[in-house]
Amino acid sequence: MAFLLRRLVFYMAAFIAAATINFFLPRLMPGDPVQIMFSSAGTELPPESLQALKLTFGFVDGPLWQQYLTYLGSIFTGDLGRSIKYFPLPVTSVLGHALVWTVGLMGTATIISFALGTLLGILAAWRRGSRFDVVVSVGAIFATSVPAVVTSLIVLFVFGFTLGWFPNGYAADPSLDPAFSLQYLGSVAYHGLLPMVTLCTVLIGGFTVTMRNNMINLLGEDYIVMARAKGLSDRHVMLWYAARNALLPAVSSLAIAIGTILGGSLVTEVVYNYPGLGNILYQAILARDYPVIQGQLLIMTATMLIANFIVDVSYVMLDPRLKGA
Image (cartoon, rainbow, N blue to C red; front, side, top):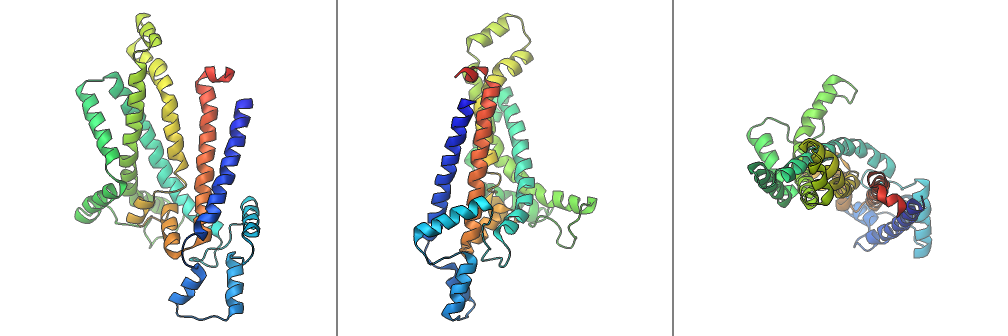
């Protein structure tokens, strides 16, 4: 418990530090989003109206420390302000709508990639040197080496434009009303298949390489040799002796992947025009929508820290030696 409490305090301090960086970073960007918005529309406002609009968006002309305290207070009260690009919607509504699509797409792709990548890594390490190991290892390294934007464009061009088997964008058929029906859910699955294939292709290689390397490092340990000498089956030794201990670093990789789920896959979502958090963040950057950018980065930071804290807890459960550390 003392170990977990220390980690909890550490993650709280890390969150405050990340929130501080999140406060100063957009303010270092050139340009005033309010001025840019009305300049592009060709509208001139009197100073009183412009000042009132800045107050609406949270751009207070006060001392920096006062703005910072106001910003911290808004974080812990859940008031992230109003979006500039999607005005008058609040930031929580904009991000909440995109959150559903991102969790459905990224969450499913991460779970599938972790399960398949871990299984392939275990089998490749256990059969190291075989043809299966060579094919899996080369394929995994190739998948991790190709940038996500290249994979997304190739998959979209082949299956979307050339063959025409799948739609080229959107999360569902725009002509359908959003409802919990088989027709709408089928449209969501149909439109999300190509982005999910792209994400699985990008993610699965990393999980495979990590698990394979961990397994190979453990196969020469004394307890593995002893388990084989006791006459235990290869399947039992592979799963309960080697894979269980090799799973600890793989859990860390899963935590990092889970932490990036709420950040969305910016490249994939932009290429497929998928209405997730990654696409929202990209549009907010183009529009200099500071409230949405700050809200999105806070969600990503909080998710990453929570995922790492869960990993710390799982480490204690998976490795009994840490309970006495």
